[in-house]
Length: 111
Length: 353
Image: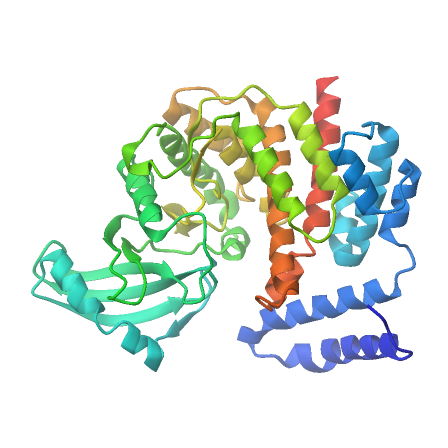
């Protein structure tokens, strides 16, 4: 996906206006779709502005991309050890920070 | 199937269902069947579910009736079970004493409404997880409901192969866990992106597979959202389209996986209650104890399965085949399941030490 010089501003503005000007005024039967739209805009904005790329977490285990690691795992070429698990966990947390930061925050106190 | 909103019949649909009452009358031996009301349940791109209020004069089911008609959506893609196969599974489950909707009629004549369909009794209450879990009384009715779920799942699991009416259901010739692992790997191979956490989980599942229990009839989507609750009691178990022969702990793992607790993480049984009440009902009805130590393995399997399904739904939206926000957002869910998987595996291995 390529972005133009005003994409981030447009996304930020769309998100802000939708949340403050549209969402509070939706009819009850439209609220569910409204919340999904708000969430979608949140994810798009976070994805467009993040500098902490999820795949970079895999470098600790010696892999540059998710595809490389997945192929190596399928071929049973990777040892299941604490280094791998740490890298996978960091990778997942970075993905969650984009897709659902609320779940990530809740998971910190998890039993 | 999400039991969401209802909407009335459109003009096109009135034409589509014009012959239905005549077919119902002939099938039930009634002199007359009037369809007083008909409305479509929202949700379900592959099947359609219609609520019918009918009045029968004479025949097997004389009087007012409340039914559900289930048929293929006009733009249906092939699914794992046909409506006739689903009807057979419903019939077997109902006969086994499971709280499945009573199956009433099956129609394979596509000239009646344009596709095969079946009629089943309608359960009361709601299947919407949000409504059930946010009911302030769930703390009080949850344990008894969990026990009912255990009893009913145990009754289903007493059905073992071979069953002549279910000859269309393949009996895996390898351990159910291995069968599932191979299937999920094949599913991942059809996606455009690769998923290392799921590959890791599948390797772990393969290496740590417990000994199989007997192969039994499993619902294979037994979770909150697929059973109806009325006044705190179980009224019907729905959505039998994924039923299969498998390890019974697979059903229990699916029901109790964190991904299906809707945020009520401490209530392991679908977000409604802890495990004790469910297992008490299950063990009493089945006559055999459940090894709790096996359940986390099947919960890992459940998280993997739901992650794969979520990825498939996201891919479906991305391809343009079905552009909905719901599918697109579902496609973003797998990291939640992946975190659950890593936490579970860590916990299982800590407990094993």
